[in-house]
Image (cartoon, rainbow, N blue to C red):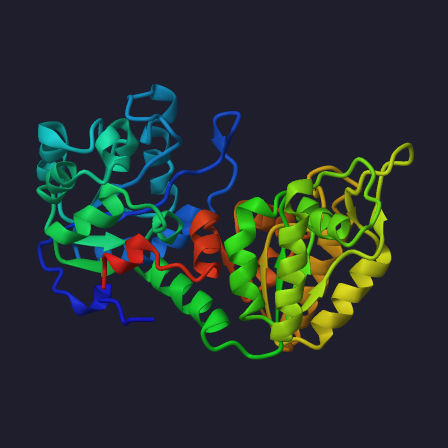
Length: 379
């Protein structure tokens, strides 16, 4: 990984700093149900406040498609920040123009100014240079601390970095180091667990992983396509019959590369019909014993329909075993993606993994070996 410019390398005296965060938080009954992304941003925010900067937060929420929508305003998140940071917090009802400029100018140094949802302007997702220049006009320095948005070529992630001195934030720096250590210089044997419903959405990922990992565990609906390709009766299970030839080719390629693919050998299914919903006890044991031989695990996607008990048992058992090995210093474990983290939380082991990534799409694209636009923009 190219060394990226970092916050501690720049002069912050009397600076107005634009910080791109991902505060697209999950809400339930109008309350934030998971504040992980706020907590991950605190190291960067505190550092800037300690240096008496004006800290201007850029973020998005939901998919308003360029149209202002009160239900997707960032104002409710602004009200949460004083619970985490001891400083004045202000809100600007737009992210560009005189409204934003006036709010920033009137705020004291050592305060936070939250700008309104970037995606209320369609130019954000279009990576529009004029929009990026309007954002740049509001500050002196740009910090990207939103790894989970860095696979998107959006104005606040890519174009903005051209118009201001740009550095990586501490949260994103930690994320990149943790992920880089796993795939660039992993301690071997290395296992990847990949779940999810479709092979079609993860073809590039599978092709990249079989060249990289020693064990590849396939779960979820994706595994059913491979079982079908091998001639197994999967009943009414979710599968992509048109991709059986592709699945066979992946199995052959893995064999040639010396990558061992682990597929379910038994499963959990409703009593009245053959519909694979989770891996069975034998498969769970097989994965757990393979993990005993590994030094590194990277995990994206549960191995069953974990949101419907009892079909969460396979994923939970693997999560707990991986956490146990990690806590005993035998395994480096990295997990990413919303469903995977929800699964680790359900198993009460999220804090027992070496590193958990809040990113979904960015984590996947990084696993696929792709260059992320938001990271390239900083180098």
